[in-house]
Image (cartoon, rainbow, N blue to C red):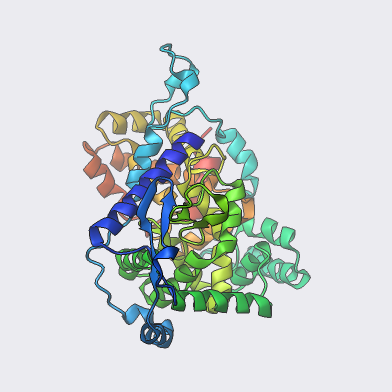
Length: 459
């Protein structure tokens, strides 16, 4: 896993480096720093062009950026030459090629009965284990997303659930809040409950820290800024739900790229931040820096991790803190190679195993026509369904991610979507036709799908 992650990181850096070379642009411009002695070169792989710190944002440009900080969405920089460093489908190809060398011995042992694309024999939960893990999603437990529908009188569940939520907030009990949102969070309480679960506060020093990051954005021009702009323009700006938050997305993501505190999550992440060295000092740790400063290179769709949070938080520093905590707890696992149960490899395997075990006819049919289900569902999972579900449904799903401290529910929902559309999918004869059947998930109701898949139709 670590070897594959290392190879993947080299590919990402090579892609970024070749873009720099093609466009003849540096990776960073740092204020008041025009000397060649400060040029940097990338340590892995070595490359002079990769991190060349040149002469900084001119003062006029800094003032202009500061003045339009709250309306950056009106800016129309020419990004035609920039391209995403990678897209989810590129990452999927890497995961498909993962192999356990201990299994490459020619005989068809146990795991070879797995007919999906993922060929790494990790332990994933089966339906009985999932039922036990997600016990609060059971048919006899009240759920926001089901029991607050117009047909159900609020006095039967909703009113009492809201009352308990208010009590949890009054007591400021983080563990109780996490348990509470397993049944869904009332819209009016969600922002406070999530902040409580994530231990986010609004202390003056937190606001000051955000302002320092903002100053860093104003003074330092990074190549990743253009990648962030490009990603927002390609994704959130074209989304019916999220286009209104374009300014917030730029603010949060540009600050995020400068935040060195994000580096701390690499202590429990299989990935490594890209490291660069001052020219001539390659390999000497005291001359090493990270690029970008947070160690995270954005990919196509990265901004969609932030977009749904804009519905909940309208104060930039609070929005920023929530996103950063969501990222270092959960989202990083969706684009790094590891054996963690919430890692993307395990999620892919869980999804394929659920389909193959409980919907074998559908699985085999799609496989036979060259429409491996994972090729369709991967993009949903890697973005935690952001941009695919209606926002109210997505937030109900993310309630459960926080409540169970696990991303496994993404794989279960992906399988449930296939189960829900199984009749139509059995009739398709190509990957394109299967994709067409599953092209629009915006009308789906998440909680009924999950409940039925886990507790009703499957034995």
